Structures are given as C-alpha cells and as structure tokens.
Image 1 (tube, one colour):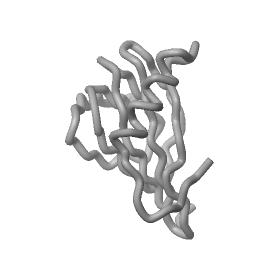
Image 2 (spheres, helix red, strand yellow; image 1 turned 90 degrees about the vertical axis):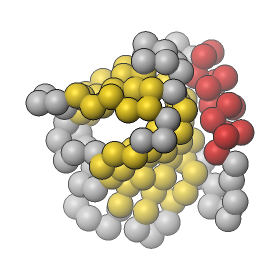
Image 3 (cartoon, one colour; image 1 turned 60 degrees about the vertical axis):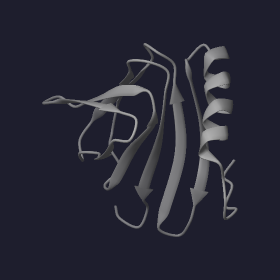
Length: 113
C-alpha cells in the first residue's frame, strides 16, 4: 500500500484516486505515498460534499491541499482551505469536508506519542 520509491507523480495519483472516490459509496479514496521511520504521508481524495467524520488528531501533522477546496473544522473553529494551502492540524478532534472534488497530502510525524 505504501510506495517508498524516490519519485512519485502526485498529479497522476490524484486523478487515479479521484476516479476511485467517485465510484466509492464513501466518496473518498486514499493511498500511502511514504512511510519512513519518523514520517508518514498519505494522499487522500474526497468528492464534492463528502465529509470525513470527526476524528482524533495525530500529535503532529500537516494537511496540504493539492486540488479543490475543503474545510477543516474543530469544535472551536473552521478553516477554509484551497489548492496550495498548507495547514498545521490542531491537536484536537476535527472533521474534513470537501466543498468540491479535492485532494490533500496528509503528513504525520510518527516518533511522538
């Protein structure tokens, strides 16, 4: 599931995953793109209107929007993000909602607990 090759084309992978997400009942698809000793990255896609329900945050993570626009919401605040935006994910429960077909790179530091 995770490809640790040196080079990957995230644009091509985004297209593949969006096609998969459009055919999925959940409206989403994901692929691990890197898994190292201290770092994990996954490319996630959501179709327009799809919400990832509220879930716990990893201790340290970022979300980078590669395509589309989405909202990351905690109990206290909502951040609207679009292609090119990079956000540090707050260390609290949150949800993600896609305003349009979207892709984002999730980066998680794994050596913290």
